[in-house]
Structures are given as C-alpha cells and as structure tokens.
Image (cartoon, rainbow over all chains, first blue to last red):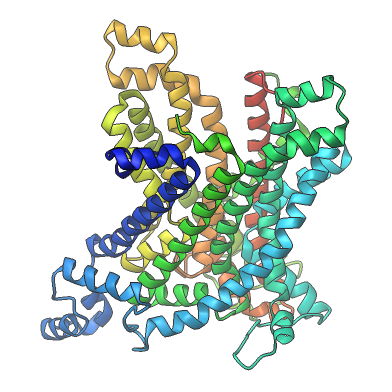
Length: 335
Length: 275
C-alpha cells in the first residue's frame, strides 16, 4: 500500500522513518482522496458512457429533433464532457450540485435537509446495535458450542437472510396495526421536538438494528474466537494466568482491531440499509430522495446522492483502517 | 460423502431449494390461476379457494407466488452464474499471470468495491433502459467484484503449489493451468461462495424490485409483489408479508446449505470447526 508520493522523495522517506504512525495515517488519507476522486469520475463519466440519450429519454414520445436540441442546450449537455465534469466537481466541492431536472429545485438544499435526517436515523441505529452486537458476540464466545451460542447462531443465520423490507413491514403490522404502540409513517419535520422525532423513528431504528445486528455479531464472534485460539492465549493459560487477566492483557488488545473493523464495516452497511428502510417507513431522508430520482431518471440528483453515499462509505472504511493502525502497532511498519 | 453425514439443517435447506425449483420449473401446471388473472375482490382474505388471499388487484397470491418463483430464481441464478464466470476467470487470470494485469484488475476491483453495491446499482440503473438483460448484467458485474476478491485469494494459495509449477515447466498454457490445475483445487470454497452469492442475489433482486427498479409489472416477482401490496399493511392486510416471507424462506434455505458446506470445507482443511 505504498503510494508513489511517499517513496520517491528522500525527505518524505526520512519523515516516514521518523514518524511511522503519522505517515501511515497520512498515506491512508491520501489514498482515500484518490479513491474519492476516481469514484467521482466513475459516477459522472460512467453515466455519460452508458448508452441512451437523456434528452430523448427525458422527452419520451414527444422527442422531435428540435426539442431534443433545445433540452440538451438547456441542461448544458451540448458542452464537452470534461467541461461539464470540472463544473460539476467544482460545484460539488462547495455543496452546489445544480438543479434537479424533475423539480427544478436546488439539489444541494434538499440534500442538506435530508442528509441530516438520514444520519440521525443511522446514528441511533448504531448506538443501539454496536454495544448489543459486541455484547452478544462475547456471550456467544463465552458459551461456545453450548445452548446460548447455538441459539444465537441459528437466530442470526435467519436474521441475515431476512430482507430489510420484510422486517420493516412485519414490525409495522405488529406494533402499529395490532398494538398501536408506534407511529407510521415516520415523518419528521423541522418544528418537531427531539422527543417527538425519536418517537417517530423507533420502528425504522429497530429495523436497521435487526438487520445489522446479526452480521455484526457473527463477525465479532469469529474475530474473538480467532484471537482466543491463537498460540499466545494458550501460552498465557499454560503459564497459569487467570482467565480474566489473560483476556484483558492479551486477548483484548489483539481483538480490538478486528472488532473495530467489524463495526466500521457494518456502519457502512447501515448506509445501504437506510435506503430501503427510508422507503418502507416513508422517512424524508437521502435514500428516499435517491430512489425517487432514479425512478424518474433525474440524473443530477442521482449523481449527487451517489457521490455523497460513496464519500460516507469511503470515509467510514478509512476511519476503520486508521483506527486499526492506531490499535495495532504491527500495521505501522509495512513490509 | 455419505448421505447420513448431512445434518438435519442442511436437509431442511435442500428441501426448501428443491421445492422452490419445482415451483419455478412447473409454474404453469401447478398454479391454480393465471399470473395476471383477476379472480376476485381486492385484498380478499384467505379462504379455501385462495390459501393466501388476493392481492391489490384481486389476483391470486399463491399463483403469483409460484409464477414469481420463476422470475426470482431465474434472474438471481443467471446473474450469479454470470458473476461467477466473470469473477473466477478474471481473478484466476490475475493470480496466474501476476504483474501489471494483476495490479490493474485488483485496483479496478478495489475501486468498484469502494461504492456500496446498492448505491452503485441505483446510479447505473438511473441511466440504463429497464430491461431484464440490463438487470441481470448489472447485478452480475457488481457481484463479480466479491467473487474476484475471494477467487484471487484462493487461487494465489494454489498457484504457488508444486504441481502448478510442474505444469508450467511442462509448458502448459494459462488456460490449462486455470481450468485443470487451479479450478479443481479451489472448488470447495468456491461452491460455498456460490451459495452465499446466490442468497445475496435473491435479496438484492428483491430489494431492487421492491424499490421499483427491478422486474417491471405485470410480471410477478417476489420483491415486486411486496411493493404492490405494501399499502395494505396499514389496514392490517398482510398480503405483502407473504412474498416477503417467501424471499426469507428461500434465502434461509440457501444459507443453511452454505453453512453446512462451509463447515465441511473447514473440516477438510483440518480447521477447528467453526471460527
């Protein structure tokens, strides 16, 4: 994972030798920026390269050559692709994603409102899911191959197989229709108090938690079992170290990196889960916005949402890697 | 392998898969009513004539479920097979030739994997015409990134073995090394991965259809049926949960078989069982 920038100059090499930690982190940051740039090219250029002319799709049946030409110049499609890409990226940096083709409204403004809503939802799902998953994973390891472990194993296998929308509608049927204990649809608006908002998102959060919980727990369990079955844990046991001490001193530091990884991976998965859950619960977030835009082929909105989702995903993966570098000194010195 | 070594859970899984395949293959003969035939009132409750009730247009849910199995299984299977062909061939080429081919393919793969699959699919489907072929191709290409990653990892393990070296010295070409040396020795983990990817394809297709971007009406498919009937939920009509349950059932069955295959693989390797 050495980038050319860090190896080609003697000064940088010296910096890297003196500050291995800082230079590794810097390297990872640069890599993410590069990745993000490549993704933006792919999201913008990829759509352009695909077959199909948007002006004629946009007009549908009434696509006379003159109308197509007018629409193309109106939307700026008659300029070269490089010009349009540079314009688009420059705007995106400052939060200006142009106007929606369908509604004519500013895309950046809409996203500003909806991104906050989506993050609000994902944040509370994460707060509930992460401790629960790690705890249950530990429990499964503690009672390995006994009843609790087997029960957790079978239930999580089933939970992994459930589509998000199935879980969502099941919860609605049970808690809204049968018991009337929750609200549907989960609309939130600006003047709502925090408590009302929380009340509105109980079911979507529960759905998201159920969806990521099983994954996260299975991965936590596997990560801990791998650490527990390593040679140094056996040594610790053989030299007479108490179980608790061995876990705190030897297992925990080594299990930290894989667990961080598991958590970050699943937080990234939450981003995707949010899309479906928002549609199920009619929640005004980014996912719903993007899906609506895809249905009517509103490309500026789709591109903007795609870029933001990808940026969050890349950012989370980067955070995971950096935390892993911090938690595991072995990663600071690449071979 | 003896039959009595297969655990009960795997049998349940095999039974479920066979049942679904049977429905998919013989749908026109089993289904009591036509795929788009309106037979009664909107959201009529379950009765002896209609075991799962009627849907939002008054069509028989059981019949549509059986016809939907056809679409869901066919599209998922086609995209999984395609993604495997693509992923395996590319990853094995990368692992056997190494050098810039390997670097190029791996970096491209990393790039594709840096966008969440669903988001990627949404972006691509916004631009492409909505046909069955596009859908299968998009799903296959996006999924092949995961196959590539696993394929390259297992192939690299095998590619350094003595018998591969011997074949190379014997003067065999890359196709021989890929199909006669590496493929047979990586079959077991790849088979388990195939199951996993198939389960994922079912969920993914259903999600796309549920969002209105997969199979287009009036063709029945399980995800689309959930979308059609979702408005009934709030009135206490559980019609949307039936196709949702079918998706869950099939995916659980596939996962049960995969779980068994994975355990078998790790015990073949002399591993410690689970972990």
